[in-house]
Length: 270
Image 1 (cartoon, rainbow, N blue to C red):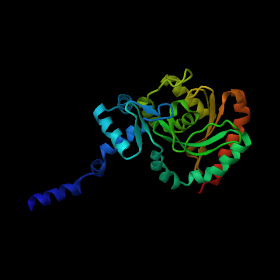
Image 2: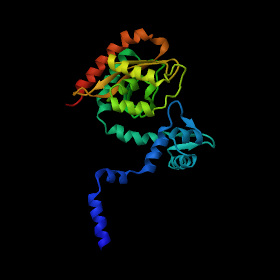
Image 3: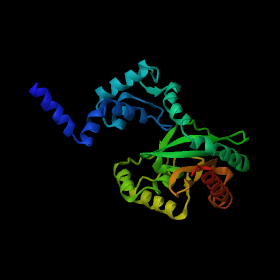
Image 4: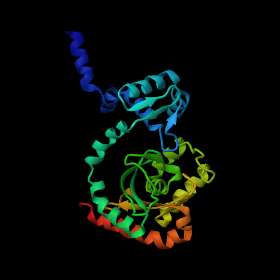
């Protein structure tokens, strides 16, 4: 009885931080790390590559990957692992519960029709961008990105706009841990240059990225703010580089983007 009473007293005196730590399931978090290693530029990887990207040993990575395969969220061809479309189910329920995609969709549709280019609404999740809404033009060639897709924030115009909205300490933490992967020959891999580009995006109120994520593709993004002025997302237009020069993107696309961003802000609830 004395032991039980002592345990109860210790539980009552346990700080909230310790309770949160006890409730934290490390293995679940590490499993999510494995899922996040797969990107548009790396849709299929070997066990060793996944382990390296997730910063864990091969044995642990193998257990997580085989669990995903068994549950139908991933596939394995004997050498390479890759995610299956079923993985999108994990994100669709969250997207469906959010009001932002519903608010931005009509504006995205109008913007895509006006510019005849692919338009997206993007969120920041750590050092990645996540696409939550999209609209295509009537052109034969469109930029196709699935909802829920992730991309490295450092080489995306949307990522730089969103990183520029962070508090100094938040940005420092991300830049300290981020891995600047060389995706194309144009990708910025210097943290000093990246910080400068983020600062430039914050000062100008927009960002243009020229073929840093995919050769032949340029993109421009502006922030979307709520009624209080806090940046909550980015509005993005992607287009094949032959259709717009960098100067034309600033002169023709940017005004339409800024107008659409303002429309979204006015449509958000108070």
